Image 1: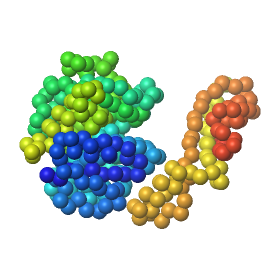
Image 2: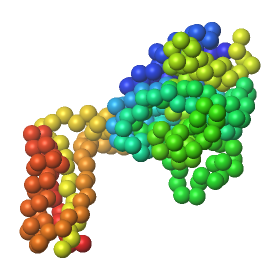
Image 3: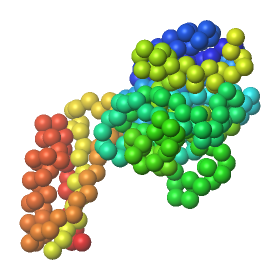
Image 4: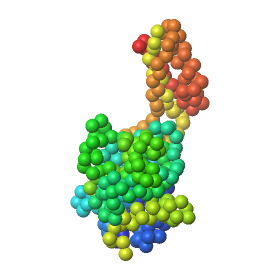
Length: 227
Length: 82
């Protein structure tokens, strides 16, 4: 299995993501934002960072990068599993491949903290996770407050698209466990094979660094193909 | 009386605007015949003042002291009674 990782101008978690995949024994392939082909790629990650300096809006300019035409096509034609982490999540929302948008944190502050997230509904590309599971993952963002248009929140839950919610260590979801003002504490959403999350699993690959739940998360995404 | 103030802040033409340049480049890649992009910001305020002239003077001072940096930015002000 080959996992592609796209580097946009301003991506700064691409190397960490490569290291994480390497640790899991996965064949990772670097992709450049001007590439126009994804042939031979089985899964794709849009890493975190500040693509195009987050000018205009986070992820807005990267969403129009040449490679995104190929990404959109591969999702439509081959159901390519795509994972957007932090800025990658923002890019997928700006491209319209995931519902909603990420607005500035309600606190007005950049948040760099460890958080717990609870699995609400399991996306098709995460066969290894179960509803109710709790993971400990770090966040690091200024524009991570997930938002949807009025009337769109209920359908999101009904369609099983709310993947992760910020919670306490026991999985209780409430206002005090919301680090950024996201609607309904939403930390991750999915649409078909496309998943986006604000936390950074690639920064939680070893217990001695705070948590190994990122490794568990990525293994679940890599699924039964993991050899 | 209450007045609505709009302050439009823009980088001076001589100041490099990386956000504008990046946006222009992406728009050109999307196929639009864009020559140049400059990105500024619009700040809306509501103030109480004795008169239109008083409101304009307040706006000018706020723009000079905080809302714009006169070293690298220009601004223009629109004031209307609420």
